[in-house]
Structure formats: C-alpha cells, structure tokens
Image (cartoon, rainbow, N blue to C red):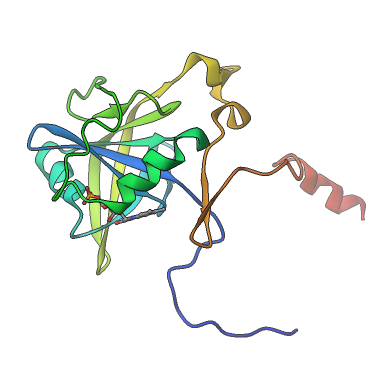
Amino acid sequence: MDKVTLGPMPYMSVMPTLLVGANVNGKANYMTAAWATVACMAPPMVCVALNKTRFTVKGIDENKTFSLNVPSAKHVVETDYCGLVSGTHEDKSKIFKSFYGKLKTAPMAEECPVNIECKFFKSVDCGSHLLFIGEIAEIHADKSCVVDGKPDTAKIDPIVYAQSAYWHVGKQAAKAFSIGKEFKKK
Ligand SMILES: Cc1cc2nc3c(=O)[nH]c(=O)nc-3n(C[C@H](O)[C@H](O)[C@H](O)COP(=O)(O)O)c2cc1C
C-alpha cells in the first residue's frame, strides 16, 4: 500500500453540474451547483448543499420549492456564469427561459433537457452549508432526450464537474447490477 493523506476537504470523485432554480421576490434565479445527489427512493428525493449566503436560499425559504435543472454541455457558458454572479447583484432571470410546473413557484429552465421540480422537505444545517432535501414533484424532460421512458445520458450530454473543470461523460465501462456477477466465476 502506498497512500498519502491529503487532509479533510470537501472532495467527491465526480459531481453533476446543475442549476438550482428558485423564485426570489417573485423572480426566477438560477445558480450553479455541483454538490448534489439523490437522497431517497420512496418518496423520490434529491439534495443539494447550498452555502448560507446564496441568494437562492432566500427563494427556497420564501416558496418552499426549487428545481434542479440539468444543462447540456452546449450551455456551459451560461451555466458557469450562473456560478460566477449572484442574484444579489445581478438579475439572472433572463439567462434561461423559465417555465413553471405543478408547484407553480419553482422556475425551470426550458433550455435544460431535464428539470427536476422539487418541494422543500427539510434542510440540515451542516455549518457553512445547508443541505436542502427536496421531494421530487415532477421530472420534466425534452422529448428528444427520452428513451424508453427515461432520460438518456448520451442525448442529454450532461456536464460533469471534477477538478475545477467541466467534462463530458465518458464511455460506458460496464453494465451496472450485472457485471458483478462475473466475480463469482473467478
Ligand atoms: C461549477 C460550480 C459549482 C458550484 N457548486 C455550488 C454548490 O454546490 N453549492 C453552493 O452553495 N455554491 C456552488 N457554487 C457557487 C454558486 O453557484 C455561486 O456562488 C452563485 O453565484 C450563487 O448564486 P446566487 O447567489 O444567485 O444563489 C458553484 C459554482 C460553480 C461555478
């Protein structure tokens, strides 16, 4: 074994690049977020860690709703911009065309091929960040990106975040819940 210790830091191997949508003072705001994942299967939930200073936090507190929008790599410029400027200083409501779903107050970006509409469930105060957990009210997806009733990764071309850079998803290594069966044969 030849390991080095790197010290405690907020590391994860790869992360998604998402846009958190929230209405703040009745206006859509989008912020870039990478610290996000699925939180529960039944009911379906997702979670995202937001610094307490984010303008977005005000909107989630205000409406108890938010959205996680999955941008395609072709929108990497707009996506990064939403992580460079805060709604506190600049109106980000026109960067994407917003639409609303069943919750009425969670703005979603039309340009993003998948939009996860969420009802606030609870937040966990972890220190600098609040971990917002949202129950999924609906998944909205571009018809062109749906195959067999599910969002198709290759068609979406989502942005992976790692090492302070944006990446495309690479090629498949193996089929999950399947390749492991080979282990027994060894
Ligand atoms: C690639 C990337 C990922 C980010 N991920 C997060 C995150 O997960 N949580 C967070 O609080 N801020 C994150 N940020 C920073 C916010 O997007 C940034 O502070 C933004 O201006 C906040 O917008 P708001 O104040 O309008 O909510 C990220 C920024 C970038 C560029």
